[in-house]
Image 1 (cartoon, one colour):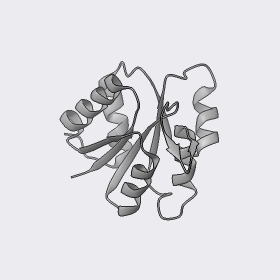
Image 2 (spheres, rainbow, N blue to C red):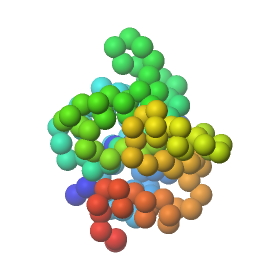
Image 3 (cartoon, rainbow, N blue to C red):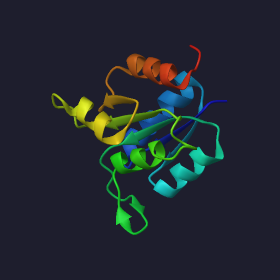
Length: 134
């Protein structure tokens, strides 16, 4: 079974991601705000996709507050985890934000929140994690 790690600090968004991913993509979902847990899970292997909120309120790494951009950089700068696709999920949706955030973070893909078109989101997730249509 495919495994998706969702890094999200908003409880409603976390529930939405979990339901969409478990029900429509039929994958295992881990929701966390902990950079340590994300990095550990990806290092352990078996993670097909990481979905990262850009603006995290309470995520800390080695005593410093970090954003989804920071966590993505950590994953992409580590040879052992660089190949795992990362999707940025953010409410930052002004013109140019997608390109700027992907460039800053090294992420593979960007999706704006709120997720309005569930079908499009699910299709995008399947594409990036190599899942077959259910």
